Image 1 (cartoon, helix red, strand yellow):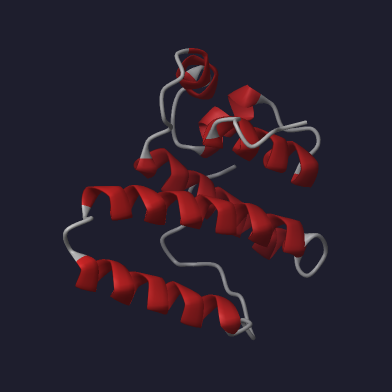
Image 2 (spheres, rainbow, N blue to C red):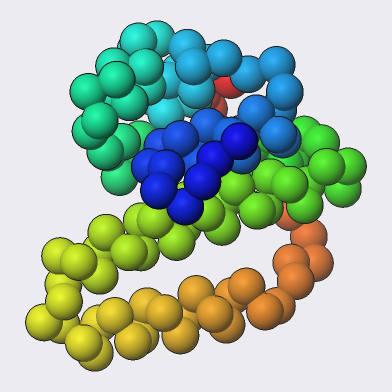
Length: 130
């Protein structure tokens, strides 16, 4: 069980295990587009998972959501939201002086999450096999 003081990576792992109970750290690493030991290595060293890896993981989850249809897609959406919030918070830290940029990005995220998607189709550039 995670607590408030746990790292983002620990919370992410717990959320992924809830949605995909059989997933391993090696599979998470591969879903992030990295070698099998990446996630374990990063968490052991108490480093942050790269934004690029989070984007790959988000894409992996999108593929899982498409394959699952409406079954269990709510849990996947929650993990994707966690990833999106982390990426946005990292962008905010790096662009703290760019208030207009952050406000625009936040408003677009809020607008997109309030509208439910009507159809989901695989993206033409998603050729990676998970």
